[in-house]
Length: 405
Image (tube, rainbow, N blue to C red):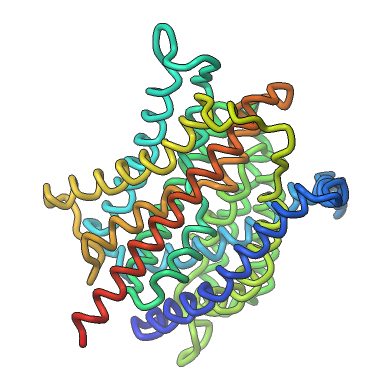
């Protein structure tokens, strides 16, 4: 059985790991941007765009390297995140419905705020700025979980661990909402048969949890089957990771031993922190600034995305959180202060890889000007959110340490 003491130890270990992996993640992203704007840019883009075929029995899929990282390896990341979310909902900080309500409502506010600000800049009769593009409103909606969690780990490693759980839950709900928008707005059709196969496989994993001594290999095979069907169905594999995690039991296989969920969390977390996330950052963060003019910095798409991420996220997340807490519909995370919640709200404006991905879907590759503005807006908005959020949280941690002394 996973006890409160075990859970606290795992969370603290994760924060220490993410403090180190956050630096690796940032280094990988900077390396990608540097390579994408260097004489070796063709090597970098050739590598991430190289097609690679995976064939296993009747399963055959050909994707680029960057797509395999996003659709394959990142599903493992969402699986680990889902494991932690499950524990917190069942036995941890979020077991109280009033605490679970806070990150969910804050996430909804964090989706509405950026979208409204983007539309305010890109709509009107006539539009406020020439070249406005209202269809780009989903771009600033998402939060990059990996970068946001890493920024928190670096800026506030000694802040209450429950803040990490709050940010993690909020970001998951936020990104699941973004995944839903992708499916609704940018997916031509779903494959019902494959989606049904994924649901059957998930049911099998759920039944497997009733077998107390089920080998871990069966859970791993079940996850691969769920992932394969989800990939073929046209639905984002991030959903497969979170859904599969929900089937993992908390109970131990043997009395006196760590629980199944704990074993998976501790076993997979180092691979996610030091391999999967840095590789994802390296593949997804690189973009070229060649050919961008001064006008691209102030175009309506760039302004809408940047303002949506920096202003919209903090207003939406923090505003929604304050509202439900004041109305006593939810409670603050245990031990958290208002200034710390505000710092987390700023970190939610780190859209980066997810926003870049949605931007590629919202604007065709032939619209070079809009695509360039998306990149500028995402980078500027994410950097402002990172710097401001980390500064606020670092100051809050220093203030907290002074009060304890």
